[in-house]
Length: 297
Image (tube, rainbow, N blue to C red; front, side):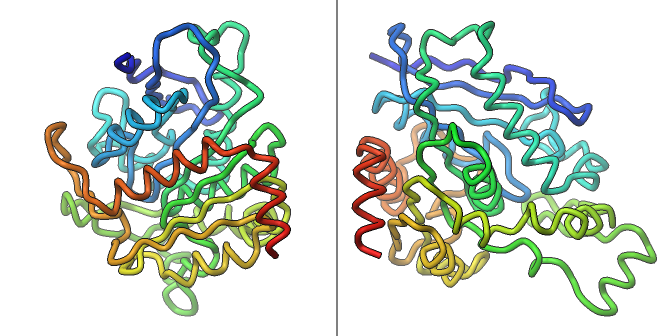
């Protein structure tokens, strides 16, 4: 059976910006485990081959969900372009945590149109890069999450902020800019981003969240990742009580994928390997996995 797709379903989040969401699933009326994917920094749900990953996971029997964080800089009308640059500047980690909460809550509403396809007792999160950090935090907070998969994930948010004179200059100006290498745009970061982190430092502590996990955690990272050090995968492996480490030889930060990605293109072997291992991990019994990894500690 081919998978069905419902694209750009709009959720009203907590922060006055829409959250567009895509669903990929077999339309067979049977309840399926849910898999929710969170994109990374300067990312979006339609980047590269995320859609193809969703198709393959849905073909394996899962209800796959991907969405755009409300303040990622895109809009429902232009889901792959950063035209909402002020929203990008207003984004922060707590907004992204709230957005993910809104997505989970909306899927579990009794009025959700596709509710007959969902098994609410089986929810897995996948996060890429910065989205990996968000999924670690959410998995430690929300007891409804049953499995966690992080792809090229960060292990710390605080170390990514500037220090000393650069931080002082940011505070004084109120904004700093970063170039989007794909489009050449100057994207703003307002100083509120740092202030919000400092005010919520404990809530946003990935290490403490990882140590509190009560679910199995698959940690995938490329050996040639120049954006997020492979050492961050090592941190997560050290902290998570039931981790499985998947080191992908010669893979970069996006496992060989680029944007845009055409439907007819062959997936890179590194990315295929990650997807296959992800499905294998999703198929395994969560309690057995947790016991196996915890016993190996």
